[in-house]
Image (cartoon, rainbow, N blue to C red; front, side):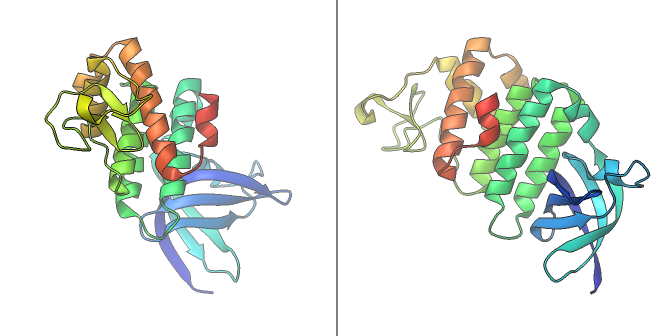
Length: 238
């Protein structure tokens, strides 16, 4: 059973037996990985705290027949305590790691890995409201997966904006000629906020109003879940 090293962020954990855990990680080189961590629930464990959700670690593992085992872990990003210690940051982080897991199911996903690490770092720093960090991550993660939304020109005919009608199923804003029944009309500032979040323009995003953030969050949640083709459990508890 050969040893190997990998860098990964902990997405979630579940109990295994009396003292062990199964750790689900998004790794830099192998994509999603489920591995056993022996004895980490004991108070004497040397690396249990390094394998909590939102932590980034350099790992040594050995391959098993059905499940690999983590034998060493050293911390690369101690984001867990800063995120889990605040309810709003924890809720935002939970949405982010669930989305990362869904988007990385097909194999190695280095861009998704980099996006998640950057977003968790920003969330842990607590300089930006958690909901903005969450929505910015979701939009950019969907773009990295090949579903980039459009918030400038009409996504159906290409007519230059600004436009305020959004059709999630079509991928963004539409003009008056291309509108479909039931398409929501947003405040112009909400559309600008969506564009800023997609671009990672935090200065522009920080100038948004509460109403604009609420509208943008609704569109972001709908867009993400439409393309994932199923709901996100963590979004239902926002």
